[in-house]
Image (cartoon, rainbow, N blue to C red; front, side):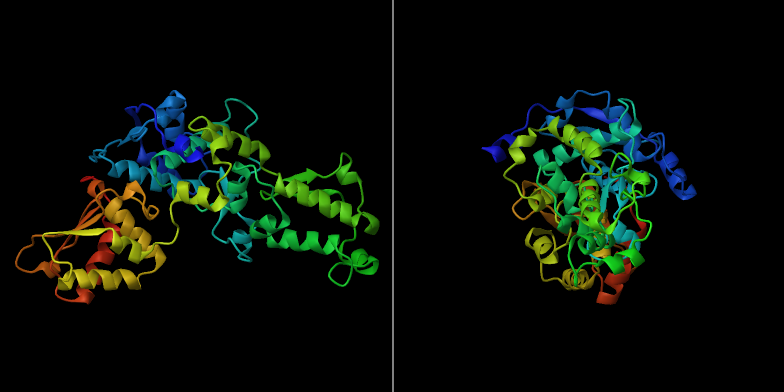
Amino acid sequence: PGREVVSRPSSSSEEVVTIDRGSAQSLKDEGGVDASGSVMVFAQASQQASQWSPSVFRGQGAPFKVQYKHELGQDSGGVYRDFMDTIADELMSPQLQILIPTPNQADDVGQDRESFILNPSLDVASPNAPGRRMLYFLGQLMGVCIRRGDVLPLFISRAVWKGLLGEELTIEDLELVDLAAASIIRRLSRPPPEGVNAQTFAVEFAGLRFVARDSSGQERNLLETGSRSLVTFDKAKLFAERVLLMRLNEAEAQLSILRAGLGSVLPVETLTLWTWSYLEEKVCGVAHVDVSLLKKYTVYDGIPSDAPEVKFLWEMLEEMSQKDLRLFLHFVWGRSRLPLNGSLKWGDGFKIARQSCGSNPDHWLPKAHTCFFQLDLPQYTTKEVCLERVQFAINNCLSLNLA
C-alpha cells in the first residue's frame, strides 16, 4: 500500500523557473557564499518555487520547466535534467551552506569521505530565513524524485536518510561522519584497556569542560552550566553520552524542515517500511555508473551493434573512471546517474545512432541529444580516435542549445 500511494501522481503543472546562470557562475568564480539565498541556481529556483502551491510538485509531469536567461536551450526534458545535476553540484559546493562536508571528508579519514551532511548552524528559526526556504525546496525536490523517478545526484551521509525515516541513530552513524569524535566517545565510555584510566584521563583530557563542537564547528553546551563545568574522570562517561546525544541530533531543526518539504509532496509515513539505502537510491539514483546496466538498456538506430565504432565506444566506457562516466552520462542525457534497473525512467533506452559525416569521420565530434538520451556516433577508424573525440566532447561540449 505504501508504494502505491507514493507512485500515484495527481495533476501536473506548467510552472517555469527563469534562471540567471551568469550571476551564479560569477559568485562561484569569486569563491563567494550566497548568504542571501538569491544568487546560485538552486537559490533562484527556491525563491520562485516558494510562491507556488505544493500541488505543483505532485504532478505526473516535471513540476516545472527551466529557462536559462540569454541561452537558447528549450526545455523538452534535457534542460530540466541538467538543472537537477547543476543544483546537486551547487548543494555540495561552498557557495551554498545548506550541506557541509562531513568531518571525515575534511580530514580525509574514515569512511563516507565524499559525503555531506545537513549544516547544523544553518539558520532556519525565522520563517523568512533563506536557509529554511532552500531546505524546504530541497525536500520538495526529493519528493519529486520519489514520485517521478527523477534523479538528484547528491552524496549525503546515511545519517540524514535515516533521520528522514525516523530511524534511531547510533555511534556507528557518527563514525561514518566523524571518526575522530566517535573514537574519543568510545575511549571515554569504556574501561581500560580500550578506554582510559584516571591517570591517562588526567594527562590527555586536562581542562575538559562540558562543551563540544558540532560538525559545523559551532560550540554547544552539554549541560546548562557547560563551559563552567569541568569534566572529571568520574564524569567522563556522562560527558561521552552527552556528546554523542548532541552529535546525533545536532541538525534536528534543519532535518525537520527538510522532512516538511518532503511531506508537502508525499505522505512521509508511506516511507516507513523503506530502508535508508532504498530511499537514497530513489532520490539520488545509483551512485556507481554500471556500464553493463547502461548496455542492457541500449538500442541502435541505423548502426549495427557490432560496428567497429560501437565496439570502440563500449571498450572505452568500460575503461573509464567513474568521474568520466558521469561526465559521459551528463553529455548524452543531462544527468550523472543511472535510474534503477527496471525503472520507467529508462524510457526507450540509450540510443546510439550513426552520425553522417564528411569525407573523414575522424575529424568529427559525437553529437548528443539530451532530451532523447541519444548519441550520434561518427564511424571512427580507431579506438584511440574514438577515445580522444569522446573525451573532448564530454569535457567541453556541455551546451544544451539542442536539448
